[in-house]
Amino acid sequence: MLSKDELAARLDEVRTSLAGRAELVAVSKFHPADYVRLSYELGQRLFGESRVQELVAKHEALAADCPDIVWHFIGPLQTNKVKYLAPFIHMIESVTSERLLEEINRQGQRVGRRIPILLEVYVAEEETKSGFSPKELLSLVERIHHAPEHYQGIELRGLMAMASNTEDSVQVRGEFARVAELHEQLLRSGWVDSERFTIRSMGMSGDYLLALEEGATHVRIGSALFGERH
Image: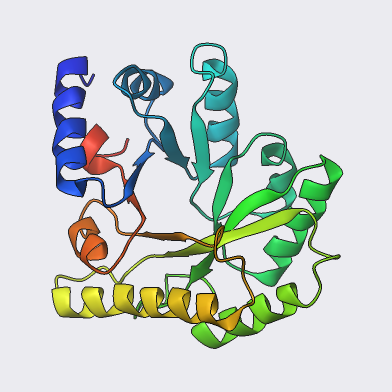
């Protein structure tokens, strides 16, 4: 069991390295709710989860004691599970297909919310990664812009990406730079609300320092805080 002192030291180390340049998404997936509670007591508010059942259980367990906790969903999401997140999720970062986007939009309208979302961009050189190609991304955002009456259940907040799992820092840096370029391109296009489309969620425990240098606004860090997942 991770002690509060050890977790405090890890959180402090990560926050120091961020130096206010990006917001920390503490990736609590596969870790117990007690770790989330400890982190909350240490001032952390934003947490990332990747399994719907686990997130719903933690949300219910912690809602009373942690009233201003913020949940981001960051993993693969099946369309038939969106309905369980729609009432409370603060952001879905991992929107990887139009079909999923349409279901989030539908469920958001069902519960009377605009659910904040990030569009996941495929920039890595790995078949296991998912998301929109740059061309697909631009086309989709343009279509959303021209049909605002249809998309009343979502709010576009930015982009999310995962870099290739490689030791080649030049490659990783280039992939993050591509995300930043796409983000800037979309801001220039006039298809997004520049005051709301502000997020570049990229970088994890092994590569977040590179992501910071390429303009990440949010970094998703789990193992550096909580240790290896169980």
